[in-house]
Length: 258
Image 1 (cartoon, one colour):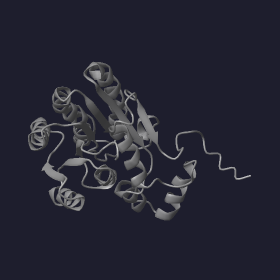
Image 2 (image 1 turned 45 degrees about the vertical axis):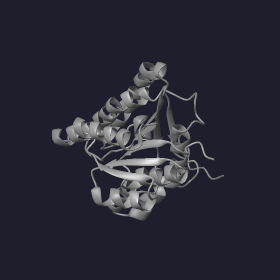
Image 3 (image 1 turned 120 degrees about the horizontal axis):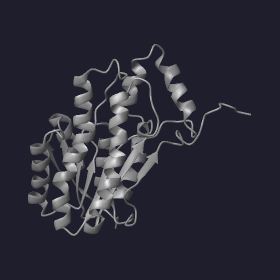
Image 4 (image 1 turned 135 degrees about the vertical axis):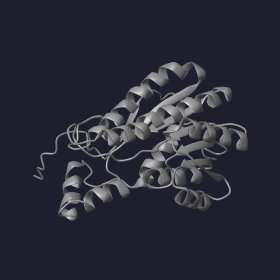
């Protein structure tokens, strides 16, 4: 018996990429997954692959009414909510000079406000059930500056502050709040980044050289970490950011092979 057997877990942004891998792992470990995403076609395909212990609800996390509906649907359908993985996020490029206000506002609305709204509507349900876990997806971008991604970096850094404040506010309710900070994983986001470069293979090699383990992560590896943090196996972990980056942020890569 796994620690997720019988758990009702709401997952946002689960139609593609790391979210999809996490949905698959949660389902594999016995959880019922309520998947919220704006992409109905892909979202329904994910829940079909998971089987009868999964349902899809269309949800734009930047809209409070959508987040409320997602939580209410999950609680009504299954009687309770045990945990939430708030994963929905988008890209946004530009320096502080070149990033237009519409891009800034949209990235903040999805990547940071979306975390706030999902949590806002999840906490009452978790409290009523005697507690649970909230896990948000931040990024290694929260810890260091990357050129040309000012809105994305700012939003991902804000998630860590939100997690710590929520952990203090809701620990007395038995609600644990953490975030994952992935580095490069083999999903659509880095693939699009590499494809936009003059020499995609060279850029992929350069990225691998930044990583202590010399490879990008497999999405399934992040999925297993997410499952652990959402499960009863991590009862004393709250208010923290778990970095899953193969050692990318561990130190400066001197490229000395001697």
